[in-house]
Length: 80
Image 1 (spheres, rainbow, N blue to C red):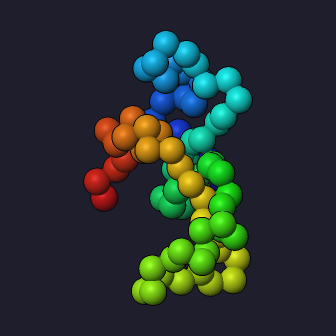
Image 2 (tube, rainbow, N blue to C red):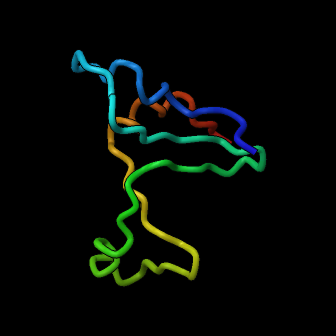
């Protein structure tokens, strides 16, 4: 099911001289080609602030991924 990590391991050096010890935000490509995100679940905190054209269907949630995780993963994200 989990095919490969997208971006560096979350416990590698974060670039500021310290490794992430207590946080593991991560991006994974699945065998299906979809992506799984490990981040902080913040559905209830952010739901009231959704733009008027954004919706959450049953079973969906809002997960926050730190910017630096996606920026570092950019080169590993497939174009197609």
